Length: 110
Image 1 (cartoon, rainbow, N blue to C red):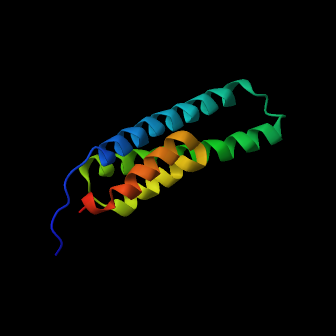
Image 2: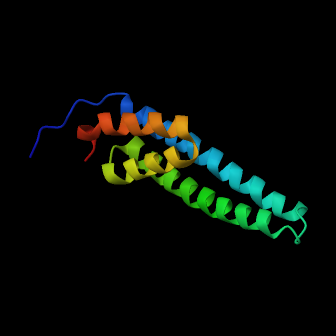
């Protein structure tokens, strides 16, 4: 068993960025749900695009939230990394930074 690595600021910052990304993703989901109330039902292409965007935003937001929590706790590196990668697909600057910090601090996780 390896000796525990010294704790740095990187997982904490990655976790905070992931949680902020989760909040933004879920806020986007709420905006899309509100848009469904305003868009006429005859605009099927727009509704289809918004439906897929809403599904992605919801899944990414939940994954980001879970990944951010595990990054703050320094547990389950793979799940923290998955949350950060989900942020890359939607919230590129936040996701890239979060992923970099998670990868650099891999040895700090249990």
